[in-house]
Structure formats: C-alpha cells, structure tokens
Image 1 (cartoon, one colour):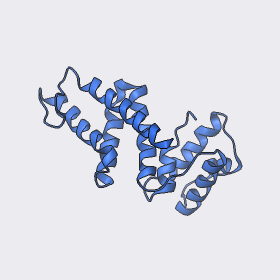
Image 2 (cartoon, rainbow, N blue to C red):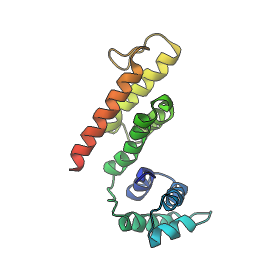
Image 3 (cartoon, rainbow, N blue to C red):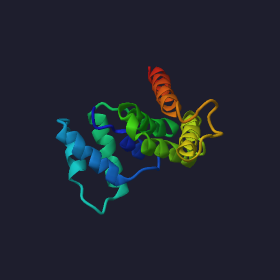
Length: 164
C-alpha cells in the first residue's frame, strides 16, 4: 500500500497518535484505489473527531484491507518503519523523519529498536553546526548521510525478518 498506515496502526495499537492522521490516511488510501466500507466511513468523518469512533473505524478498515494491527512496542515500530522508509526513499529530506524517530524513541522511554535513531539524530544535528559529534562512533560530515542510510536499510531488514 502506497499510503503508509504506520500512524494508523500506532493510533489503534497504542494510546499515541492523532485521530486526524487516520482520517487523512483513509482519504489517501481511497484516492489510491483502496476501498472498504469502513475506509469510506473513516474518510468521511469530520472534526471534531471522537477518538473512540475513529479508532473503531480505523481498526475495521485495517482489518478489511488485511493489515495486521500489532499493539504496544510493535505498533510503535510500525510507525517507525514508515519513517525509516521515508528516509530511504528521500534521503535529501531525512532531517524531519529522523527527528520524528528520535522524538518517538524518547516518548517511548527509549524503546530499544529506535535508540540508534536517537543517537543518529543528535549526531546529524551536531554535524550541521560543528565539525565533530559524540553520539555515533566514526560519524563525521563526510559520512553521516551514508551511515544513516545504512542503518535504515539494516533496520528494515531486521524488522522484516521479525515479521516472518
């Protein structure tokens, strides 16, 4: 599915996220040709959103589209996977998804599978201002982008292996 459902999965599988993300995802999914009764209802909801109603329709829509709904840390990782894919697909725009991954790591009490992104975000930020950083061994201005991309690829491999 081109419209990545990670935010929706996180919203359904945890107490994090925004109801508006679910409605936005439903609209994008419909525009891309995906369809289900609950997806249509979800896309048609208007603010102010009721969290319980949005979660109910979002969960039904995910199930109707055969998308699994993990809970807890696995739901957080589903959203993280979307952010990591954003970095891989558009490396020149990595700063924002890297920041979001770092913030997610902090918000989730330094969830272990996200911790490298916490370190890489601060290394990246330091190297924007200074010639050195102390977060990632061996990273400097000449290789920080490549290190981040390599870690993203490795993370995706690790998480795909866990799913099988």
